Amino acid sequence: MSELSLNSLLAVPLAPLVGSIAAGLFGKTIGRRGAHLLTILGVLISFIISAMTLKAVAVDGASFNGTVYEWMTLGTLKMEVGFLVDGLTAMMMCVVTFVSLMVHIYSFGYMKGETGFQRYYAFLSLFTMSMLGLVVATNIFQMYIFWELVGVSSYLLIGFYYTKPTAVAASKKAFIVTRFADLGFLLGILILSFFGNTFSFTELIAGTIQSFCISIPKNQSILNSKNSHKTPTVIEKQNAKNATKYGDILIENRSLLLNKSISANPIAAIRNPFVVCKMVSHTGIFT
Image 1 (cartoon, helix red, strand yellow):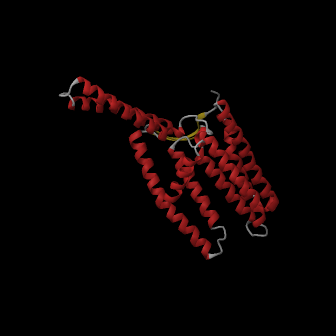
Image 2 (cartoon, helix red, strand yellow):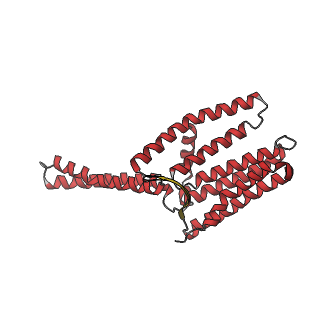
Image 3 (cartoon, one colour):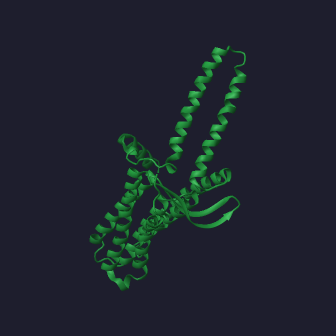
């Protein structure tokens, strides 16, 4: 199994960020067309690298899991930024960059003649960078930071026409409502980090599976003590049933927990379109 290049992965979120900074700070200098071309170029670079990454992961079995920058350490908790690239991540990188590229291209038509043209593209590229940072996150701390950046980008885009009271009210409403949801997200992160002593997806998942496996013999011994009055044949049959039950639960838990830690083939994840549509529709209805 080969490993992906860190430099190419860094270019995926940084290319839209450079376009956002150029359009936002130097918009008057480069003009409308310059801002449009630079931001499109940044997202296009991200899309090309994402497509190459998806091919490397799906065909060659490549992966990457590493830290780029460590901010601080509090006991066993490390606040760091990195990349965790597997099949799911590579596929989502392509989805985010492709959709964003189409939005960047076709926005040129309906934003023509609008004031704040460069500002719009700066916000749009910032949104893209935030989404990519969320997708490639290697730990829940990084995921939360970029999730909040997505919220800020949404707030800026919704309130783009800041001179209109309706736009300002809509942006405030969206920002406040999402903060309530983010509170639950933050509480979940605090609970996970408290009991798991780590922010890392890989370590949290490994710890959860290990704890579950350790609990199986304990439960089995309790069942054996309760069934001590029964014949050996009956006990053996019940033990076989219990082992099968625990094995099924373990497999189900692995399938739910390991989607951010194993290098899976992204094509295999979408072989059953009905399952995918059901998951998406349920998520949409809930949110």
